[in-house]
Amino acid sequence: MSARARVWIVVGLAAVAAAGTVVGVTLATRSDVHRQAGKPPPFVADPTARTEVAQQVREALVQLELGLALAFSGQQADATRAWQAAERVQPDSPSAVRAQDLRHPGSAPGLPPFVPSFTRVTNVVQAHLLRGSAYQQALRPVSAEREFVAAVQAAPNDPEALTAAAVGLYDKDRPATAFSRLGPLVRRFPHAQTVRFHLGLLLIYFGDMPRARRELALARAQGPLTSLGKRAETLLQAGRNP
Image 1: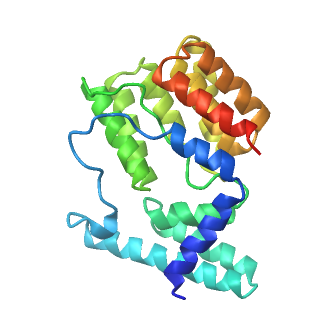
Image 2 (image 1 turned 180 degrees about the horizontal axis):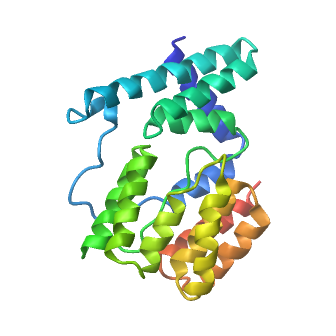
Image 3 (image 1 turned 90 degrees about the horizontal axis):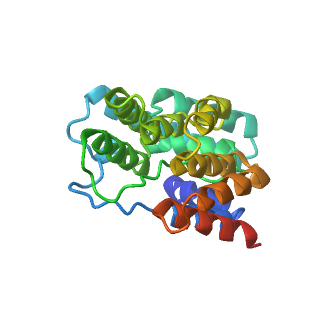
C-alpha cells in the first residue's frame, strides 16, 4: 500500500469516529453560491505558484507521509513532530490541514468553513468572501484568511465579513483566537444569523456539543426558512443522531 493511500485511510478513520456530526457538517456547509469561476487549484496543480512555494508544498506532503509511517511503526512522538513540520513548512497546503487532523483525531476533520448567506455575488465584499470560501475548500487556509481580511477592509462594519475573518482564524492548537473574535460579534450584531450559525459551527469543531446546539438553535430561531436557518437545522438533526 502506498504512503498516500495510507494518508486517506487514517484521515478516513478519524472521520468515521464522529460520522454523524461530520456528515451533518458536510451537508450544512455545502455552498449554494452560483460560481462564475472554478475553485482555485491546490498549489501542486497551480502553474502560477512560485518555485519555492511548490517545493514547500511537496516537502509538507513528505513530512505528512513520514509522520504516518512513524505512527504505524509506533513512534507517535516522532510522528507528531513530522506532522508539525508539515504544517510549519507550508501552512497554506492540504498536507498542513491533514497533518493537523492527524494530531487532533478527536475533532471533526478539516477546519470549520465559512458558509455564505448569499446565493449570488453582487459586490466586491461578497467576491472576496466567495473566493475565501473556495480557498477553504481547496484546503488553503492562509489564502482563505487573506481573502476574508480583504473583505473586512472593504466593509469594516459588515457582520458577514467580520464573521468570515473570525472563522478563518480557527486553529485546532489555538481555538481561542477565533472565539475571541467571533464571540464579541454576538453582542455587536445580535440579529445577524451568520454570527450565531458560525459560532455553533466552531463549537462543533471545538467539541462542545451542548453549547453548539444552543447557538445553532438560536441561529435557527432567527430565521428557520433562510439558507443558514436550514443549515442550522441540519446540524441540529445530525447532533441528535447516534
